[in-house]
Image 1 (cartoon, rainbow, N blue to C red):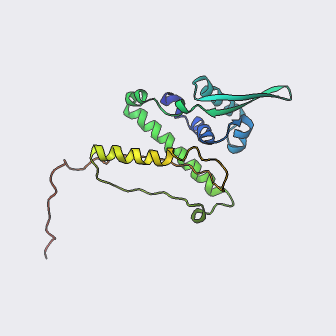
Image 2 (cartoon, rainbow, N blue to C red):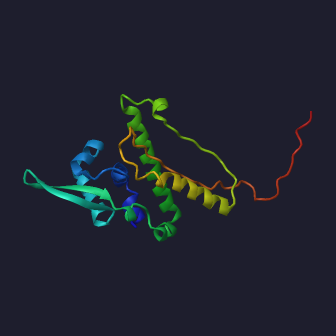
Image 3 (cartoon, helix red, strand yellow):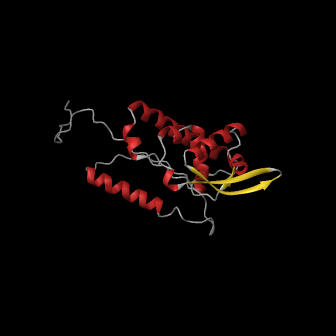
Length: 190
């Protein structure tokens, strides 16, 4: 698995998102999907991802005297190593989350900028909810969510399917008061 520094760069994150659950893509195809990234920047970040083992070359062919490579995400390397995640400082997490949130905003803005975007028809969803869970219930819930998503990763493009990006953020809600038994309060009189 890769380190946070490799995966949580804004440009590299967008390259990975373009390749997640997609057919292998060439640099040219990636540039079509991510036209705002300058070519030199794209090539540099692809090289970093290949050197780190996050991307693998699945095909090479000669095109007008150059070698065109097709890339895909090496599935075992597309996430931050648990030990590396555990070693991250609070500032590392803040930087990583900022990169992640900025990437989500970029995806959202690109979607809305498309002339055919119709949030209702396209099933755009963004929600937040607070739930009270024991550690075991929380672990079970995360496993259920991961299973719901991962079990569909192998779906192919056929059958009228639309590629959708699913993101998950879970943030513990720090209580403002120490935990204790719930107490009833009386409504004010007056």
